[in-house]
Image 1 (cartoon, rainbow, N blue to C red):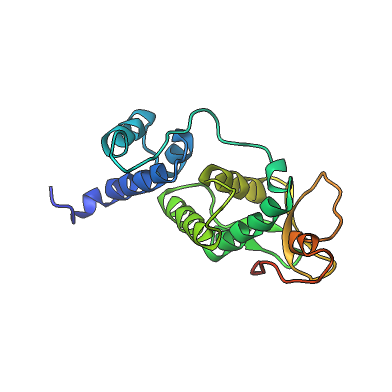
Image 2: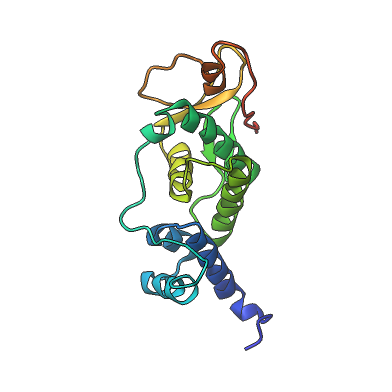
Length: 195
């Protein structure tokens, strides 16, 4: 087998994405949804490449992916980091924002390219927020919630006009986390690109 053979390109791409997502401590179901690999194959990849490696600390997360939306708005720091991810999802062409600030998915369902774009967005987010509070699974949850449900939406700050993520069922004070943390001073937050 030559690594450059086209007939192995799909499998190689699935394999590379699975390793990349395992490195971000993604859950088996999340990896399966993007790669199409079976649960046993994903566990074997972890055992072969990550378990018991000196200096490499990658934990396997058990259970279901987080589903709550309150995590993104429970404190100003999370509410400040969530629009960064949304902006990166838009830049990665995973989401688009219409003129009414509604978010729409650009991908019909997860696949390998979707997974790589998600990983790139998350890696950029980690560069922008070195002490990030949102894990890869929370980023996955945010992407799923803003693209498929109406529980989260982009709100506009009444002071500075920047966008921030808001819970549809919570009281919105029309104040972004930057202005809230700044004590009333107007400051610019993350600008989410519009379509």
